[in-house]
Length: 224
Image 1: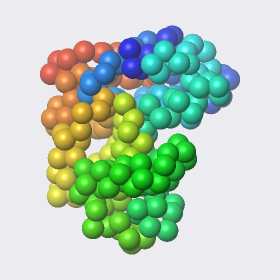
Image 2 (image 1 turned 60 degrees about the vertical axis):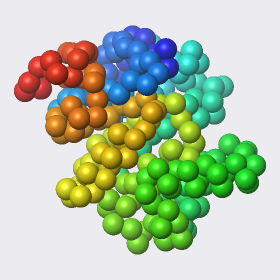
Image 3 (image 1 turned 90 degrees about the vertical axis):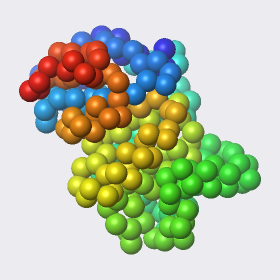
Image 4 (image 1 turned 180 degrees about the vertical axis):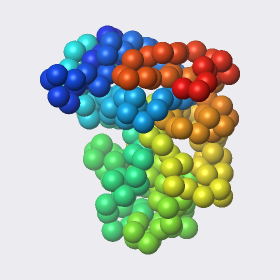
């Protein structure tokens, strides 16, 4: 399996578990919606997928590798995270430099970096923004570029935290078109059920840090 959680617990405070006994696996090519009310543990779960957080108890495996310090470089080549706030992801002087940052840190040749950057900008329709400073972009443009920074790493799994939060209708539609064009496995955290149903076939529902549903998105218990 591409991603596996085995009896995963996580606590920011020793007296309070944010996640409790999480077990699931995601295979290649799956598109999974991560659903639940605010405070359910969705963001914590996503940070565990690529080693930004390490389980308090249990184990997270990516292609069979545990998310520990020994494997973290390989893990982060495999799992790319798109943050809810693009400003947390964009920090270079130009869009092109932001999109190139990941591949350059993978010690690829400059030709390979250029090819990956061009491809990522093309897939997200942001090539015309290559020379722009990220702070001069609109919210929708920032979101598209933040996706490009992950695509340039060519991860097998892309994890997205509330990707349409704060976007207007046209920016949301552009995001949907980008995601629909991708063959990567995807975990999509969202409160937008219409978006989830359009982009995903499977849903995982969290409540108070525990799974209450894992199955066909058409049969999600509602309200959450």
